[in-house]
Length: 253
Image 1 (cartoon, rainbow, N blue to C red):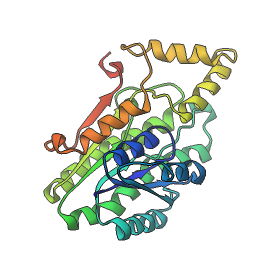
Image 2 (cartoon, rainbow, N blue to C red):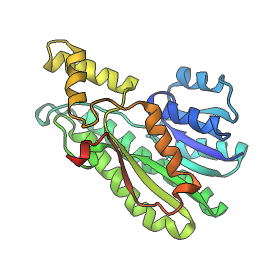
Image 3 (tube, rainbow, N blue to C red):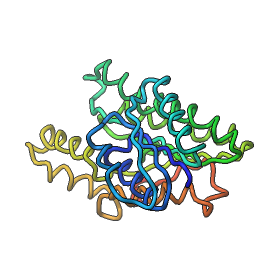
């Protein structure tokens, strides 16, 4: 079986992607800090396997050690989905240094650490496919999302630069750019937005977000994971350096 490494695989899009690859027969290395949610994946029955590696992606040495352990157990990775990320909403005038650092350290530096750890094994194996988690905020700014938008803009540029560097090694790199997806992370965000802007009405906050998307609904995590899987499949063999909107038409407006 082939090895797929997925960071931030415990919940949300990462969770759906872990299940997608495991169901397709991959051995999945689930890299996350959430032990409880991650271990539940390891108990599920799939054609492939799921193994949890407790890892804080802010720590480069820890990322390297987890990837090395996964490779020792399963062989070189054919897939990396660098998905781990957080969001901290704040206006410019209320920005906290610790929130800026957390968003940049996890979303941008953590993504680069994961690629830097996995790519040498792909190079030595002569092939590999990497997908980075970007955002619709690669294409559009959103209020209260300065650090997050900046981090995802950086991820988009990483995809371009890495694709140029790694293509001669037969390693493809693409970035997926979803609009809002229904996950535990966004549930918390929209709960906070409901309190801040809609007198505590979370449903009103979700309704406003839905109305901003031409297709008129919020994406599911499984819809995003299906696109991630496609990007790493042979069917996408001539795609690299691409920023793929999966946003219900949001960026087309």
